[in-house]
Length: 173
Image 1 (cartoon, one colour):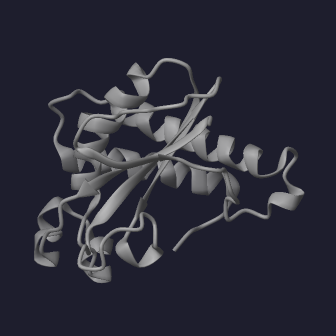
Image 2 (cartoon, one colour):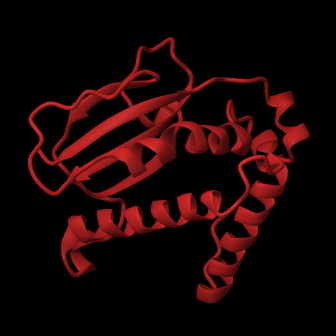
């Protein structure tokens, strides 16, 4: 079992709390979590885990809300989660990750949402690309001073993502 998923709950907040951290999209969409909370969790929990895990081939993470079905959580749980996939170079038979991580389990790799049929290397190649993007975002976060204002870091990350959109002329709404 080389592929493992684990989840980190993002504490829900009131939509009205989005505006002070400058997350207008979050406020408009009625999200329960925003960029500030995610950035904080990436700094405090994702970075130390991926940087400190031995035998890791690659990783990726995504943020899911309860409507996505990932993770499968109790119906009353309306929280968002950071979904972290860890892929090891060698099979790992048991994996224990400390709290606040939860629902850690081995998984069979599946599709990516890409048209895997046109990717050289199929779904595995797609997962590796998502991993490179995840690593890039974590590198962006690590490049900032640990005491930097959260809103300033978010704005810088958004600016870098703007540059990527500019390079490709592909916009995501």
